[in-house]
Length: 262
Ligand SMILES: Nc1ncnc2c1ncn2[C@@H]1O[C@H](COP(=O)(O)OP(=O)(O)O)[C@@H](O)[C@H]1O
Ligand SMILES: [Mg+2]
Image (cartoon, rainbow, N blue to C red; front, side):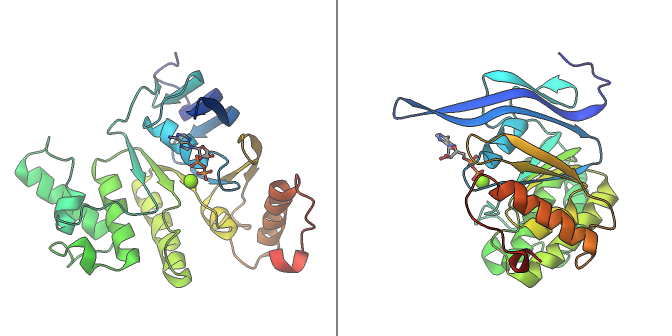
């Protein structure tokens, strides 16, 4: 068991995960080792089905694991907790609740006044001021994701896990949301771990990028991203992007077209 004053806010050690499907064992994650420090923004990329969502759910405590150890905030993960929020691709807002009630969902341990202040602060934080009384169906995709992020942060977690949160958004809204999440991360100092299939997004947001192999998902490489490389169109950005594509496609016969990457 890790010490409470552990340097790492998340520590995954020798994690293996299998699912039983039709009496067959499906190996999904193999020997995952990952240490994340407080305040980091980690992005995870990998082929579809390699176990990215499963890894996030295990860290969140939504999916169990048998082999290895997963430590969150100094304690072994045995289930979900208020110090760890999660945002999914489909915003999962409750359609019959107003935005303010969606954001406040799960805050019943607070007094009425505390809850109202917390909800308003988080609605303001994500730029949804004026939409407190709207229903999810009245919001655009980007606004719904903002509300989902507000809900994820309302419990004041020090970890936010994001599973392809901008996957359903159009390209322009997506870029806007990337800026917003960076701003929020700087303001709140929340440790963030985001799965994305968008390589550019992984580079722009992550201070480290975890590149996974095809299933069974193993960590192929963890790439540190310099602040220079975070600027789209910089040479460093292109180099990181090329490296990621090489790792992702090194098992396949496909030639990587440089024109396509840059
Ligand atoms: N609850 C489950 N039961 C059985 N198989 C699952 C379950 N969840 C995920 N899987 C399988 O595990 C593999 C990895 O899934 P997932 O973590 O969702 O991948 P990714 O997010 O990288 O696309 C897939 O083959 C998927 O079908
Ligand atoms: Mg997934």
